[in-house]
Amino acid sequence: MSQKVVSLLAAAFENPTLQQQLHTANTPESFVKIAAENGYKLTQEELATALGKVHVVFGEVVQSMLSQLVGAPATNGKSSTTEKISGTNVDMVKRLFSRGEAFDSEGFITFFSDTPVYHFGNFEVCLDKESIKKSADNFFSKISAVYHEIKMMWEEGDVVFVEMDVLYWRKDGSMVSLPCTDIFRIEGDKFSELRIFMDVNPVFDPTIPVLKSASVLTGSQGKQLLPPGIMRQHFAEHSEGKERVKQGFVPKWSIAGPKWPIGSEPVANGKLSQQLQAMGELAQAVIAQDWEKVKTYLTDDIFYKVGSGEPVYGPQAVVDFFARTFKNTAVFYGHDVRKIWQEPDIITLEMDAKYELVPSKQHVKIACCDIYRLRGNKVSEWRVYADMSPWEIVKMATISDQAGLLTVINVFTVQPEQQQRLVDFFIENKEIPMKQPGFISANIHKSLDSTRVVNYIQWSNREALESASKNPDFIAMTKQAAEFASHDFHAYEVVLTVQAQ
Image (tube, rainbow, N blue to C red):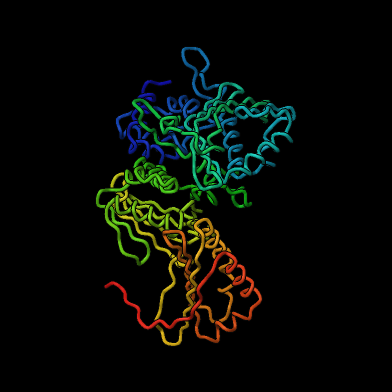
């Protein structure tokens, strides 16, 4: 390969601006012009020779010059190293990946010969199309989306080598990126053999650590090389890729997982990519309740605000808010992302946040939009826009002195070992009073010495209580509660409520 091409390649890996400029080229002429403007004078012949080996930096120009690869000039009387490389096999690999990213197992197996060898990691070898399809369907059923972040593809005769990171989105919304090398062998226009070399276990066991440096995009001195987004471009630019999208074979990463729009590249800029990754890691740290790690993603003057609630300032105050909310109100355990918008130092996330309410253990989804403003990879401002009313089911009902309301207070004296059982009984049967006409609110209190449980209920009026007392379900619940211990039942009128100013 030309030393000038090698120098350009090295410079592009170290210089994100140069790489982005080169990615905009869609003809040989424009590519050569951009290279020259940056001090790297190439000929189209030198470029054509290099394209057979390197597919990362050159972007769209690869497709426009495939026809030249076969006819590249001879060197010193010998055939060019690219003479046997047509690019067809590389194209076929991307087409196969597109089937996998769309979870199209039927289309996936059409690329294999009638006597294939398919070996994925340490799984059992598949020796026919049906077993390949069964293996693919089984794997697809366990994930939400997959994306192939290709670093390098090259052909040697009838063999294609692929080096990449494979990004998997698990069912719980988390993502893991794993290094992978694939070797394809081709017979005619079909794959006779595909061997996938990777450790896929972290997909199924999130507790297995995967270091960032494990990425094949890690370059010298640990620097992260910018991924090219080849498969994102395939669905947007390849004629077959575009047609498949029209027919409904869309990649799952565009409708699940990160929900990337086809064609655009949120990871094209290194800074944006790092910020987006940092926000994903922040979410996982919150889910894991690793508060010390959470603080590492927050600036010292972090501003945090949920809906119209009071703002919180500073990392410690933010994690204290999370810890208090998780203990007393609701535990955040995942999210379904609908859309991500990204611009310099701002990330907007539309999602359904998943919570488990305390203490009912009921699961609820809350539609929300989070806006993060960042300095570097840390959040300086975090606003959550959402209707948090589903949380209200576990908040204390308002004690009101509104005229006409009837308050019933029932005090149970229990043995310490019976206290939690009675509390759980009321929680399990809370729907019974809630369904009665005239029911306003209820609270359950348990004493710190474990000897009392207090049931506080408000009704719209005395008639509502009398009506509920005739309901068979309400009667049965009341009798069963009385079996736990003796109790003191009285109706009250609220004459005064006072709140802190």
